[in-house]
Length: 289
Ligand code: PAF
Image 1 (cartoon, protein in one colour):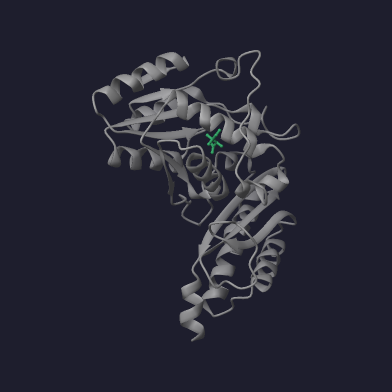
Image 2 (cartoon, rainbow, N blue to C red):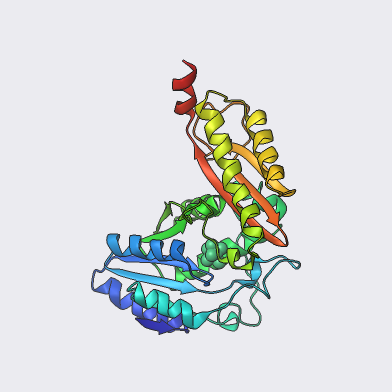
């Protein structure tokens, strides 16, 4: 596996592979890799000839009071995991290489970035779409793989790629969970053992909404209150949002009468976690008819 720090060198490798007609899949990460990231590498390997990963903790997507400085950095463990997963190249630039002095161009995110994470974390998606566009320019690929755990991020990047005519397919891949349901996340390593149970409250709340829908309750405000109640029951009381919204636009809904998604962002101690689940309108329709 090639380990490359320079954007020019990374592009040169990609260019050579593309000239050979090889199909390239891309997995963009901020490192602290877990099984969720590895599953994206595996999916890319199944669908492409070459798999490239990036590891870069992007400063521009963190707010001034967020966890940029304490975000886990473990380059040698990450390199080993990518090597074991048989990635062909990992691109690990420095902050200076990505944002040299004088850097001043930012991308305006699409409208789907406005609510939810966008409302709680001003400028977060501006930093995400800017770095993703830069990474896609350095590492032009056929398909880029993202996890469903960051579902709004997936939509934001997909819409940016469509709006800006990028030649890449943006692929959403199922969230990988621990055996009890906790979504895998680089931030789970911040959790103390006693907080692990609270963290699982996010998944329990999402499952509660799904079960209510399966029993015919399509009322979004009832589903949202039930999610909040479940979170409180599990000791999670600092909730940024617990919402059920349209799955494509992320706009609010009154009833679950079309494909939707339930999303939660909440704090467990000082750790901010997010998770989501797809809700199928047809499940309720079958039960209520
Ligand atoms: O999901 C992430 O890890 C990051 O937001 C991404 C897409 C690598 C951009 O920094």
